[in-house]
Length: 345
Image (cartoon, rainbow, N blue to C red):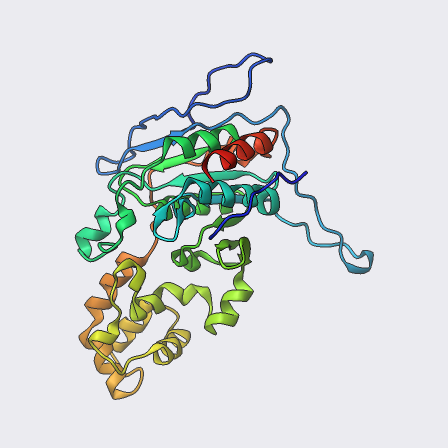
């Protein structure tokens, strides 16, 4: 039964203390530090990983084909929830916005599928800011992007494990865990408005984005990407190295070479497959018109630095816990979120 929603504007799992049968389910966050795999790896924290119910199995079923023909078995889904972006209404922090988006997410999107919530770690931006001081420097929301205890409490009570890795942004943690989940044969759905995740889109990875204008979540798949950009997502990251990312403070090539636009970049990348292949080829032979050739040779280092800044890392020191793949216990959702919405909306 959908919960009532008021109208609005617009690394290892932690141990859980046992609870008696009469006590309400409430998982308190416990911060753990794991021994890093290398000396330079940041510490990992996993906050509150609730145990799965006995003999829990994933709730998704195989779909029947048309005309009673056998259908290809559908892979089970695992959701990664990028928490920080849904904690804002516009540029202002809003617990009401968080509660509203989370309620819609549980009721209409994830249902009982596994959900893992991910937060930015302490000093998560520092790695990229060392490469480019302007990286996210203009964002007022950069202050205090850690896990709000009230947000953590709600997620814990709704039986959602929470992962936070010091020294890394949530994007990098999600990319690393996505790789691990795919290796186990699942599909991945990333719940976030962040376009950085488009570089991960594939047949088995899709996004679901909160759309404030219509007040709901909307799925974004491989088909949507190809229709929008006229290229494959495998070249998304390389294309963004040319175009830049204004929202993150990463300039594109246009301020150095105004005549080098998206059309030229897409044409060259579709032919050569990746930025590195394109730059390596341009270093030894002509790959396009004289102007484009000069840009690729003269600004190769600039483009490679953009690639390092914009690419999501897959080597974060965090390990997927198999308990995170179990069907989520939703028994607390209605009461917890209704109370939270009433209090903060």
